[in-house]
Length: 376
Image 1 (tube, rainbow, N blue to C red):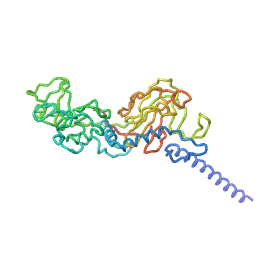
Image 2: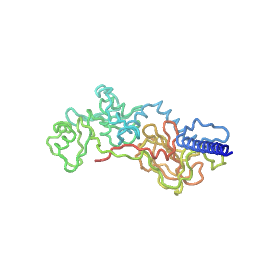
Image 3: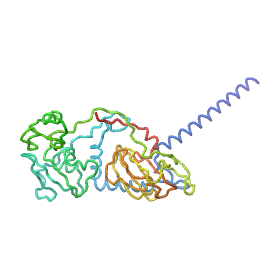
Image 4: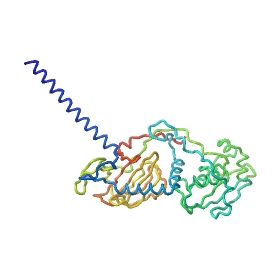
């Protein structure tokens, strides 16, 4: 009798253990599935509602635009590379970014361009050095213009600093130096010899390119440094890949929920941040290019940012949109204001993050890190 009871106790303990492990597994699986989900594979019948049709439509239109006009994507890549401060090309990986800052090979020399083209005129600064004035045409990017004139992208953007954080458009006017180099604004305490030593070029080359007859220079004077490149930053630090675009109470999390409109069960592809009055500033979660800025149907006023390495972020229900399409914005920049536009129960921000077509729980994305250069 005693042995039989002992055996029954073991069976009961074993059964209880299996049940507990099953519950833990199911809970963990549900947590994993709600952290990183490919919503497009979810069923759309029955009581399931995919709450992101407007975002899908906006992104589909965006991808169609870059397929029909490759210059758009070329300009985006240029903006990311020129404004990039990261040391790695993917957060958490020890892989050096081999593309940022590289010069592109020339496609044509400036002298090969049709001299009768109405898109350009030129001004000689000094013997052997001139500035070509170029009017941007349809389908042109700074990458393509750089190849056309046989200079680096960095040379063109140094000559046109107002274009460093936005995509060029047809009709924009660009100054194109006839040789590679950068423009440098003279600062207090600078000397011609000191500048030449810092950028590892000859003082005589600076004088010749700028038509100087002596070594005298003055503050705010803009000098062209032939053959020079921007001095890279040396010090590095770790930072979060994303930051919260708005601080407030989380009124709805990421994952399955009952719709506030009708009670259907659907997958919420982001988080809702409430507790802020209409007009509260919304900031970019990280550096990016504005690929959509406008009305998003049930999402109201909506902004979509494209980031490095296949990331996108969405900001919806805004009362006002500030960030314009095709502009480059830095993390923390004000892009809009909290509102309740579209299908909304009150003022809040719908915020979501995607990576390579998948929706990520924003709280998981906020834990990602990247290594960045800092000013020394």
